[in-house]
Amino acid sequence: MSSFLILACVAAYSILLFGVTWYTSRGANNESFYVGNRSSKWYLVAYGMIGASLSGVTFISVPGAVGVSQFGYLQVVLGYLLGYMVIAYILLPLYYRLNLTSIYSYLQQRFGNYSYKTGAFFFILSRVIGAAFRLYIVVNVLQVFVFDSMHVPFFVTVAVFIALILLYTYQGGVKTIVYTDTLQTTFMLLSVILSIVFIADQLNLNISEMYHKVADSNYSQVFFGDWQLKSFFPKQFFGGMFIAIAMTGLDQEMMQKNISCKTLGDAQKNVVTFTFVLLIVNILFLVLGALLYIYVGESNIILQPDANGKIISDNVFPTIALNYLGIFSAIFFIIGLISAAYPSADGALTALTSVFCLDFLGLKENNQKSEKEKTRTRHTVHISFALLLLLVIVVFKLINNDAVINNLFTVAGYTYGPLLGLYSFGLFTKKAVKDKLVPVICLLSPAICYVLNEYSQQWFGGYKFGFELLIVNGAITFIGLWSLTFGISKV
Image (cartoon, rainbow, N blue to C red; front, side):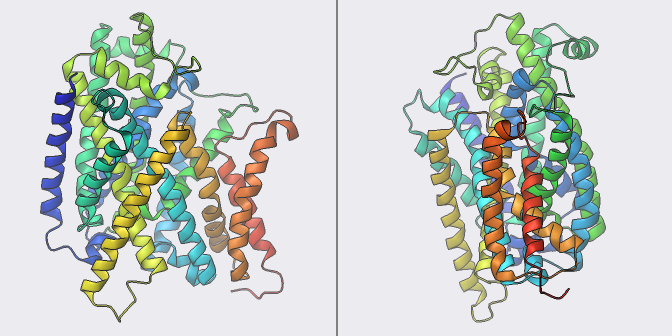
């Protein structure tokens, strides 16, 4: 596929996206930016959240990782189901009852100002790194397969993408993102379905034959019983459960869209619907991954290894889609890839701006500033976070040596753990804490987890931490908070 045609696809999609942005951002104000005037349709939020949750990580990394971990990722997705039920029936009622705009203001009401700022800080840290991971994988594919041959520096490629995202979230915020995520989810799902169809056609398989081909392959194992492995079922399942709770239920980006629904009932319908659709979509991505490797094997395709002779799993899908399945496959792959790129950062940029403006600057409650002054401040913060994302992505380009999905969940185990501990302690105990010491506990917990992870094989008979490190982190934070309650009366 020529570089010109790829650029044409990017331009056409961007024009369509900006058309939607223009239409939805008319008359938008600060309330539109933060919570979409609390008038979002629940079914649009549910559908659009699929694209925001999957992003480029699922689009590229999940199919590629099948070559190493088979269908083991499905264990994590099954854990998501339970986690999303916790969000729907425990966290959302709390957020609606307190009428929150920023979900971290709950921590202020429950513990105090230091806890509040600590929660907001860990969200900012988590979301900056997570959004950088997600956007990096998409931009890097375009860089490797298109812009390197045109001698365009990686920095410039990232800067252009972030500038586009900045422009279409600049005014409308959540009100715009609810609609643009719907558009992007549609194109992403269309891309993966058509990719499966194209590969099945190349292999001369009908639906029944494709099912048996995948089921009988070496890539279809779902459950793993070796307790020492990261893929051990309980680790993956419960890790997935708490990943869903932390990375969705305790994440302003994801909850900002949910609390933009008119009522709690609508928000709950959104989460439950989204949960089961997400399961089906992830299965599609795993099937695509198996078909990719089956096609590589039967077609005797040689995948380009890295400097250490290791196949780069994140390059498997783009290599096949762009070079072996024909022009239509390449076009739909690029459209799907772009659709994955924008949700990777648009919601994050909006949520980061919201949290900083609401939780650190107190912009909503500041009656000394006019609406115009508040908007000007919000714009400045929005641009600043865009520049920060640019910097983090460029740094990540220099150090990345693993599938991005593994990096994403590893970092999440460290940065979302304190949030998990804070909310668990607040919800399941009535105790007050020494608020000024909460930041210390929340910083110590990830540090302890890092040491445990580094030496787990030596200390625990070969045991390797996986996604369950998030649970351990949350538990250490919980115990640390409990230690701060001595001598303090109950709330």
